Length: 227
Image (cartoon, rainbow, N blue to C red; front, side):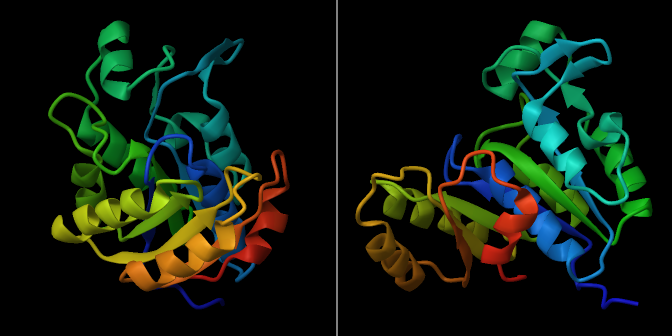
């Protein structure tokens, strides 16, 4: 049997929206699977879902489902699928729903029952609420999950990364590490910024992902170390 990590869930957050949390989360899932672990992905609340014959579906949640082994039900991967592509608070209001933490915990419990690790991807940055009065940290705390921070490597990322790391630690969470994601292939100072981030952030770099839209997450996993 493979060694079971000390964490049963990981909460993946980012310095902002559009920094590649899904790319990092799916790569992390495949990296854990390479160790022989059973892994489930989860996107508790997703806005910007498309109507399909099977119901509302979100691209990020589908990627997390595909990265899971064994493959979980979509309803557990993404308990709240919201159609409008905006902040979850606004998307939930437009849909006339409230995000119930108990529904999220129940879905997570079903995922955890069939996996050694659940990789949970948040929405937007760390302080972007899931719903009125419900922060992402509230759910991560209920899970007892440590956090991995995804940093989009571009101009301005130093401040965003330091502020996010400080907020996560100040909120009382274990920040296990950070992942750099190359979101701007024209950013000539990427490597220099990575070195600055290694000096500035209080936790190790778990890897730097290349700019590779549509790349196989299993291949991207080769760029990562386990937290």
